[in-house]
Image (cartoon, rainbow, N blue to C red):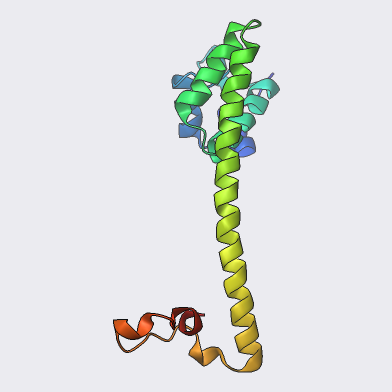
Amino acid sequence: MGLSIGQVAERTGLSVHALRFYEREGILAEPVRREGNGRRIYSEDDVDWLEMCVRFRASGMPLDTIRRYTDLVRQGPGNEAERLALLQGHQRYVEEQLAALNACHEVITHKVEIYQQHLGAGTADCLWTMPASAESVEGELDVRLG
């Protein structure tokens, strides 16, 4: 007993096409079993692995890196340091992305506060007023653009 490709697609959020693609690309830790009629049968371990791969992809990990990690896992014990280095490299990438997003969030939070203040004070009509000429922008940009 196992799960059909449709059931796995539903559980992982991947399309049937994506599941077949992952299989062709060697992203699955184990080969997918087949019934006598050729239909794929997935295990709970396959679903767990795919869910991890979905998280890796969502975090920006390239397919080549996921494939390399998969290959290392398939090779078995003895390459744990290489797996760790691969994961640590991606962890640093994710941390850099989080720092960049946090900086963006700070700007957006600041803008929200300005709009809330001006809307509350009834002075929102001065927000994002474009100056008449480029020369008048200097020194007035922060005030005019909010």
